[in-house]
View (tube, rainbow over the protein chains, first blue to last red):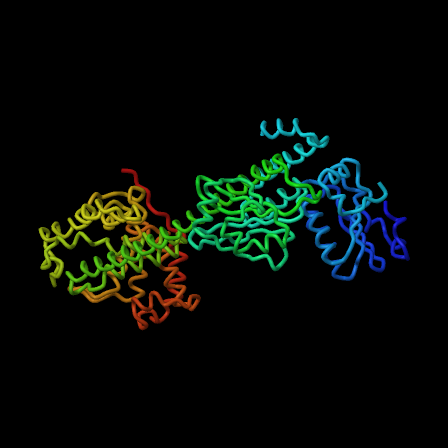
Length: 122
Length: 430
């Protein structure tokens, strides 16, 4: 869970419905949280990427991808996340991954993804 | 793959096993993707994702090669930016070099001799492209992979390159399949065009034959052509498929082809011909069959229509005196079209009959000479025009405006259709 990361009032308005939707975002100034689904594959990955790009276009400079519900990330998911990281760099934004499970964290570590993002709340 | 596993076992990296398991997963997914996907662009995009995600590669692209244009064109890219060229020219020397190399990962830094790199090397360097991988299948250069830096910042190991090449071969197969499919589609398109041209030629020939048949009979000029058109109308009213309608029309056009061998004076006799002449004339269905049979028609029933178009449901027709179900359906349609035209056109020995008279004749002979549902189809077509339900003027063009505007023809057609609707075709056993 990433409530403690949030500042301002936005976190308070999160409803359970929003939280349990595959992808939803919370917004505070310059910060956006994007929720990954339970299986980060092509379909859900592209939605995450779209959402991240949208948030950056709206001015977010801190992106947090919440993996609290994510059990598996496949190769397509990794590629998409690298695309998000690359896009964030080009936009002068930072990316953090929250609540990544152990298996996925090992995968990110092994592939060097963690060289470019912070893992938080692990 | 065993090779890959062995190499991994030798790897000093502690996570080598996990890496290879992850790469295997990506390779398996890629195999399924190449085998199952029908949308080529999507397949290539997904393949690129799988390749980049398998080794944690920041950016890359897949290009297709057109030998005809001597050009690599990008089919999918990730992270290469807008300035990366969509198409890169390749010289024949480059192509030869890549073919000799096969599907192998080439370090950009080590491949300075290639014209490709002298022309586009700057952009590859600007985009941190570290490897280029020619996609070669069956000694044909099909495309190229452009591989950027790893997220880990490490150099590519031999194992990494093996994984990239294994996946590259899958992508090459996907491109090869696509090329084959495109070629097949092109050939199918050519064949379709050729078939259409042949069909046009065939139909033109059929019409020319019909005109030749009709030219023998100065009193029934245009008869075969009209029978062809009536047959087409009836088949359409019977809701036949378009190619079946075309076949029926051909059968109508050629039904009297046997008359080409009948003496002109018999055909043109301005009197009722005698028994001997009648015997000669009545040979024309069998002769027509003999003429048409050796020809390979696109529609199988054409010779049968010629042979049996003078048969009647009640068995009193010729040449074989067949009964109802023994008569080919197409011959029943041509029989009605032939009789209808005979009744509605002037003949050497009698004027054409009035529309009500013709309708009455059809009613009276429905179930005896004519199949009721076929008679109904013809009358339905007529009614559609006289009642204004159809804007099509097929009958009007063939019969003339005055004929179609005969007083009370529409109610007569409705009444006759009702009556024929209850008529059963006689089904006599032989």
